[in-house]
Amino acid sequence: MFNQLNSYTRAVSGAVARFKANTSGAALVEMGMVLPFLIFLTAGGIVVQDAIRVTYLQSKAAYTVSDMVSREDNFIDSSYFDGMDSIYRFLTNNSYPTELRMSTVECTADCADQAQRVLEFCWSESTDGLTDLTNAQMIFYADRIPLFAEGDTLLMTEAFLDYTPWFGDLIISAQTFDSIAFTRPRLAPQIKFDTGAIDTDGNQIIRDCFNN
Image (tube, rainbow, N blue to C red; front, side, top):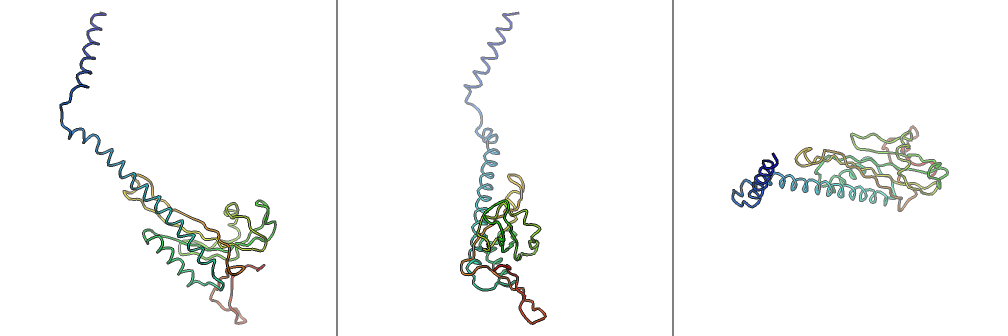
């Protein structure tokens, strides 16, 4: 019994050794085994690199638009906002669907305390597909808004891009990239929004921060 087992072991070991030492065969077979993996690896690298590129592009575009608006010293209106939306699409190469929302935030009390401060949205304007923000939604933003002095304002710019990767969802799934930029007004205490409407006294209806 032992001799039979020993002979079988030697036979198997010899077969394995001969297989390892054998250099015959077609390179085409080996390529066929490795090529699918190489194609998948290359495609994955291209898709991931493109996603990183689009994320960076989208983030820089959001900050650029926010910086442009922060330098205004007059009212902005719907036409101006639409212009900024067009610039945002241009900066992202018009490659994917985009959405934009701008809001002015004011701190009215306890502004040095992240947990206790009182923040308000003075006005909010957005593209189709988004809703304008209200103070009831401040709870979702309070932790992201940096500390700033009482009575001051910040321009909050939210930019969205609906990214669809190459090769569908094979490597990474379709998703929405979003960026948020906070910019302090450069030339005026706040950025005011002209609604284009007139009140009963014939005055422009301006959306602004009460304390400014």
